[in-house]
Image (cartoon, one colour):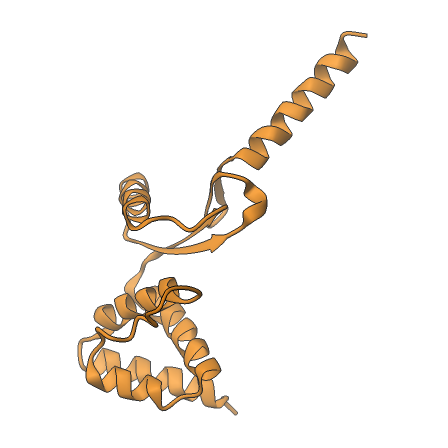
Length: 157
């Protein structure tokens, strides 16, 4: 038996598809997911009334789960390439747009970006696209430097 959250997600997804709003609702989900965790706005002030009413009826934890699952379903239906970005600090809008444009050009496909903050990275970005990892973080550079120093010390004995 499907959980209530799954039923909500399926209803929302079906409604979006039937009303040719899947891409629009997907973009709203992206905004809501990006906006969670900071700022005064919850990101819901610019969404269609029917979606706003639907989400406001749900408890906060359920609404977050519904948005997350809807995001995954819509991303898959829209055929977007899943890209995860790990950064020591949140990206600005300009940085986000720049990364998104470069990755779209690089892979030749529309992408779905999800950013996660990982303060242990110190700086730089780790980008994961399927099995491809682009790691330009300070943490990785320091580890490589450490490995090279150890090699030099042990090889020059």
